[in-house]
Image (cartoon, rainbow, N blue to C red):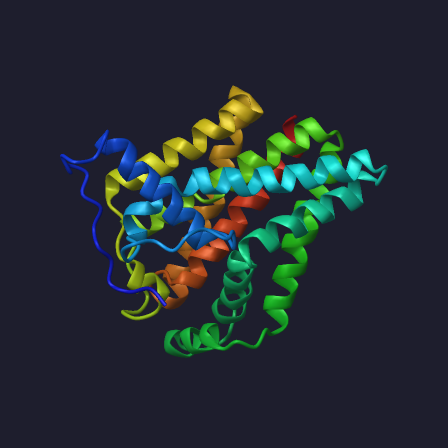
Amino acid sequence: MLVPPMRMDDDDPTAAPAWLATWWIAVTTALAFLTRLPLPEPDRPPDLARATRAMPLAGAAIGLGGAAIYWLSGALGLTPAIAGLLAVAATILLTGALHEDGLADSADGLFAGAEPARRLEIMRDSRTGAYGALALILSVGLRAAALAALAEPGPAAAALIAAHALARALPPAVMAWAPLARDDGLAAAAGQAETGHAWTALGLGAGIAVVFLGFGPGLAAALAAGGVGFAGFRLARARIGGYTGDVLGAIEQLGEIAVLLAAAALL
């Protein structure tokens, strides 16, 4: 459970240099929240809202882990289809299925034929319904199929890194500019992201995509991720009045799928 955050002091005169210290805290906080890596416990409560700017960097690290598994699978003689499934499985293990859980809960709740309060209640239910199960099947299947279509380890690795970085640039934007659907839960505890941090995250995500995919495909992937992210939020706004932690996870998943499909089509 998140505790009320302590803000990182960007103007701390004892930091050497201060900007590097705050970025280091942001990156480690983002990694601790987004992954299951065995990181040391912080000496003060994490400020997740201010760490949002570093989420694309944490995403790139997750994508790199998936890329390593894809390369290893190919080196062992496995087919691109199997390598793609194993790479997706590796990223799920790295993140503890954090975003997949949000996707399943969001699909169950947002597509329920009920009032907004009931939809929010369904999203909090730990049981997975038909919509949630289908959403997970489609998410894993589409990501693995896109990687199989890329086939070669180099393009697949580039797509994985770009997809995970870009997809994690979307939740900070929602946290900065969109309303909460309720005043409790993980999203409310994390707090509102600053506008500057949201823009930094979006810039980092797009920059990483351009570096790894090339200018044209990278820009197209960024537009695709932004489009599906916006569509996902608009659905949540219409159905429950805003975003929750589950909605942020679902938007991240939509971003991953969009970037991988764009890469498969363009590379």
